[in-house]
Length: 231
Image 1 (cartoon, rainbow, N blue to C red):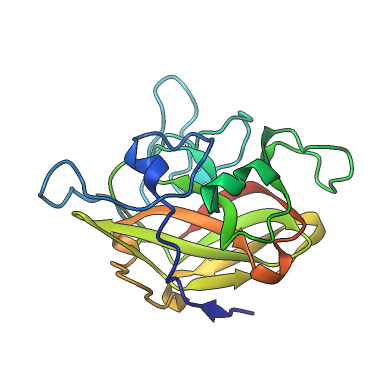
Image 2: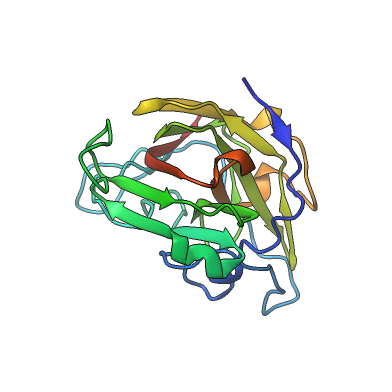
């Protein structure tokens, strides 16, 4: 099931990336202007082969599987970036616990490395996790969907954040149905994305964010274990 809500009001999500560091810590912020006036080159594109020197080739569609248990996505196909938490207002991050690696405790159904956010923030207008695809826009138009493996009792809401030159934009939020006490796959089909404020399309994607709905912010926990593109 896919539901949509407005992407408006999420204008505090990118200050961490403005500092050029999306590897963790505080994450909610406004988008500013780039240091240059020209539109950045767009990287990425259709699925292709590739790999890293001296090792097995990486699947260019795989964004992160947490095999290394760290806060960086895989450096592959022109993508490089990190995971971060965010909340608005940012001061409410003190009510949230951000964990990279093993799950916070043994109550989680999936005992594998991932990125986890737990806590409660009823006064937040947003709270969640995100990752940067690349320092500049990365073209996802050669793929049909984003597949996410996560564990969460409440539904998650996913949004694609775009950038074109100095302008940032957002898709509408799409609901990813709950998985319960086990990690399971959900897909975000790109042809189902509705444009939100200033959205430039998946060819100009810069990051992906996941948040919980307003009714669930008083107490929640979710963990993400794998993210990949679907050809």
